[in-house]
Image (cartoon, rainbow, N blue to C red; front, side, top):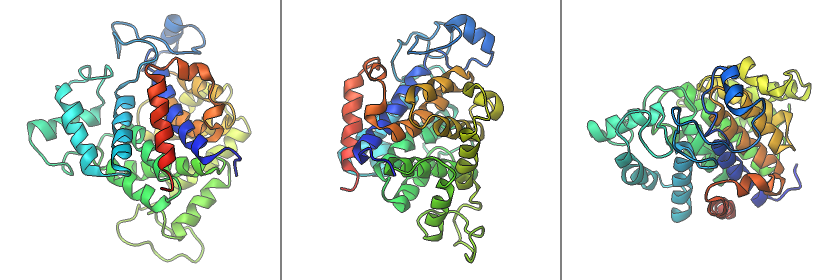
Amino acid sequence: MSTISLESRASGAIMGAYIGDALGLGPHWYYNLDELHSTYGEWIQDYTAPQADRYHGGMKAGQSSQAGLILTMLIDSLLDKKGYQETDFCQRLDDDLFPLLDGTPKVGPGGFTSQSIREAWILRTQQHKPWGQVAGYTDNTEAAERILALAVRYATDPKLLAESVSSNTRLTQCDETINAMTVAYAAVLGMLVQGHPLDEELSGKLMALVADHQLPFHAMTIPGALSSAAGTFASPDALLTPSSIARAAQQDLIQPAWKVSLVYGMPCAVYHQFPACYYLAARYPDDFESAVLHAINGGGQNMARAMLTGALVGAQVGLEGIPQRFIDGLDNGEKLLQRAQQLAAQINH
């Protein structure tokens, strides 16, 4: 178990996510690595501004994308209500985000609006559907990018973590495989915030929580376990993946590490993103900078890759393990840090 304090690991996870998100603002969605290198050089090592004619054009280096802004909305809701109240978070989306959208990708705060948010906006504002009926089948990490706040807040209560993460994910994404993989990511992050390492033993610890009815996954792979109750995720595979990938990371099987984007895939879907994040977080458990920069330099959907990796590694190194230059370079960095520390202080209260 880590000797870093719980509060430091929790704050590190949130700040790691903000940093990863902002690092991706400039070089976001370059699927041609030669084009990426010609624009930003052979190795991106800091915040960069996006090109005027590309995603997030007009924004400045160090600013948050819409993913970071929605993460802040959820954190603010958690802080104001001293816990997760879904109606409050949904009201914030209705009042503070949706009036700024028009259903197209390049309109909205942060310079780009993801497909699942666009779909929810259409059903909510144009068809006047209630929350609970506006989710779509998008397979991206949009929900994961905000629910990481819930994983931090409820890191020491896996059952409540899973319940709140699953419910929040279903607001915008209704595919149960996406839900299961998102809950699994949150469970991994919660374990890291607690101080467990991302290693080949972690999946066994997660499966023990399944056996104890703390995580809602199918338990038939556990010796002696009876069939899980109806309504649980059909397979525990999303919980078994992290330790398999950690074994590969410990052997440095992908060289250089930025090539995780080539091995697992550059696109936005969770089945490309989560494995790459687990690999980088296990490969660099005590080196925040290397983890997030390899995530960024892999191209493709590098913003989500860096944001989710940043949370995992930030939880392992703690706030003090994050280079100060990354915090200093964030737009409103001090306010973001204050939010992270306030959320960390809520854990166990």
